Image 1 (tube, rainbow, N blue to C red):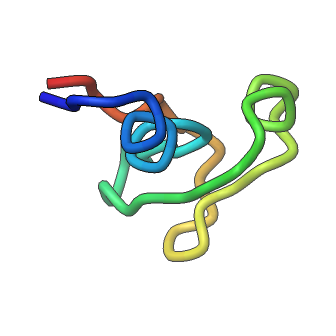
Image 2 (cartoon, rainbow, N blue to C red):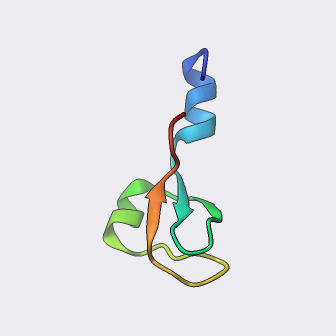
Length: 53
């Protein structure tokens, strides 16, 4: 899908998707794994990395 590394980093790096409401959140992966990041819309802590197509 992505032709070069800069575009890949911009599109996929540090972007997570809420499992409940499907909104996108940009946050450091360390904070997400520790559970310190929550969704803005539904206040859920259930986040997954954005899917690489």
